[in-house]
Length: 111
Image (tube, rainbow, N blue to C red; front, side, top):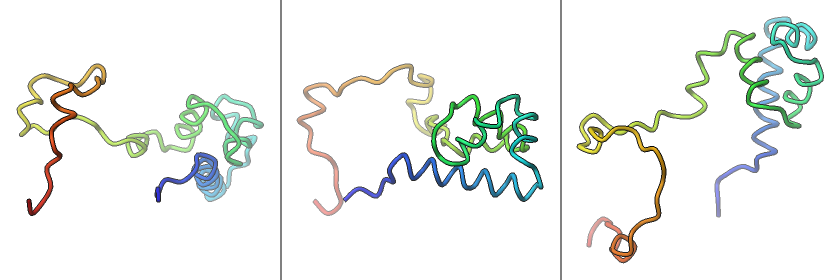
């Protein structure tokens, strides 16, 4: 069974958090919209988990002083400096595994 939440629930949770944060700063939706440079309706939709754009979300986060927390949304995928592959640099695209890689048995403990 997958432990992933449906997108609608994630959006609703995030929207509720944004609304609570906004209210903790004693801001009305119209005030946040003005500071963000977006419409009050866009703020209301995002807070309700009913959609919006990444641009609108980032504008809201910036207006709330949360722009530095955007890195928490997605961890850095850079390789470890101890990994020799790090010398290659960040990946530019994904590829399918080769036939040999698909046939290899995955490593596991105790075998």
